[in-house]
Image 1 (cartoon, rainbow, N blue to C red):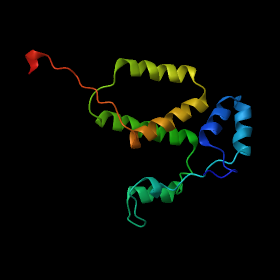
Image 2: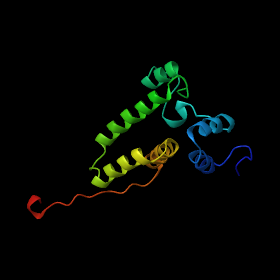
Image 3: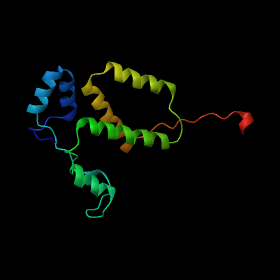
Image 4: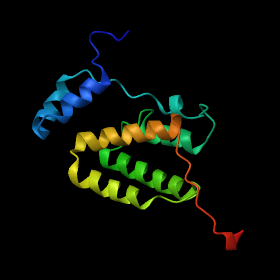
Length: 139
């Protein structure tokens, strides 16, 4: 059962999305926001292993608190582009349209929520497998 002092994340996102940008900043400042977890919570990282991950934590903080929001979004984009290039298959044309529609019509809070939802699906969800048809001549 959730603590009464910590709001349900879905309710919090829905309330935040309905506010103006100025109201959103006030909402975020006054709302109890769950603290980020350290890097080691999400990845296989051993303290003092002299890895890139240790270097990142040392330089930017265990929760990336010493990186700006823009820099975090850039890193998300850079990692996602590389992972997308390495993933099998191709994107359906409609997904490009969905991306454009989301960027052009959704407010910032909804786009951030969509990023969070997609990351969770990449890590923990099931994915559709798109099979490309092979013509009889190619078999």
